[in-house]
Image (cartoon, rainbow, N blue to C red; front, top):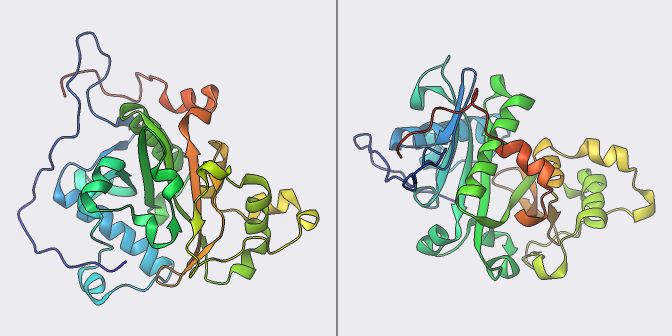
Length: 297
């Protein structure tokens, strides 16, 4: 999970990932392009915007959550790795704070199968055997590095990110989403209730079930099923994991302790055709008040 410093360069505009707009289409051709009041949601378009997302990740993961940066990361004040150049970076920009890179207050990192092939692998293989996911037909999307600035942490900001992911999924015809989601701290016993709840109630079907690598496997069955208080277990889950569960998500077998990030991780899987129509449409509805006018890509 270490990274190499990127030499400073002039701000480079990233290659467009947009599809050409078709005649009569109501879409702009961009994967994500949403406005909600002063907030803007879109993919990073320049190197400086990616670096702004990396600085936000550094503040949240390393300064707030006590992750251990490499010397290069500490010197740069950014969280970065060799996967970043192959990912799309979803950004929440607060235009009251600033335009473009200056206003980045939320981010999510998105890695599609085709881009992972260029990198050589998905990020999650450091923790899980994801062969069942890689074998799944259609587009596969790995999500990670989700964070929101402390002063902007609200239900509205998280819902905006989910709306963006829904648009991205529709745009790229994603069949399956997955990623490592975290509980704070490196003592799995401290999370006996939520981990046991996830195993007994949301374990992925065998054909879609990743397994923690044998050297890192932590049994999630830390409590007997009959001892679980369902209400207390749900309250103990981080909001991000609860969000995946609302989408019909499942978890893989085994938790993993990540000492660098000071977390206990689970692998979450969402098969997009299992998402209820009502919920999915809630996040992909066309809203003239929150989307810019249609135009060329």
